[in-house]
Image 1 (cartoon, rainbow, N blue to C red):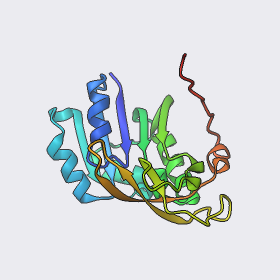
Image 2 (cartoon, rainbow, N blue to C red):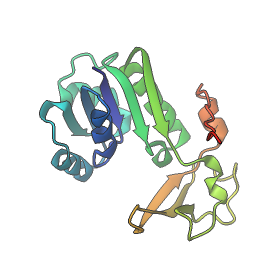
Image 3 (cartoon, rainbow, N blue to C red):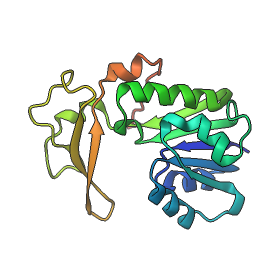
Image 4 (cartoon, rainbow, N blue to C red):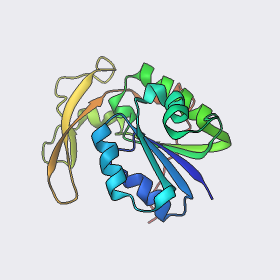
Length: 184
């Protein structure tokens, strides 16, 4: 019976997936009121989903204010942030991580996903994901917004942006890297 915090939940896709996988409840936040509206429209399950609009920098304050969670510190078993940090500077990412950590119960799990920092070197416009980063340097582009595109499952191209961070930006925050290898 895990309670999950979905930070930067967008239209609720990942929230719906973790409920399908057995989460008891998901609380989702996103800066976009339009995305929150979409999440509410597509998430069926009554009390298992709660969504609110909030900037990530006000995560704990808004959990208390909008969700009625009197003590947001230590309220969640799991927190996730899927493609959130590519919209934040390294400083804002660190602030978000501190608040997410505080929202977790002791021993809680935090899972996040970001484009690999080496994606700055992917210039093939036919790739599923690419950034318009020709001439940009790995270190000199740190905290710079880089535009690009991602393809949806049905092949539609969507414009995106990513604030570039180095692998060191993630490691210095204390994250452990797990490398998954496909079994042959």
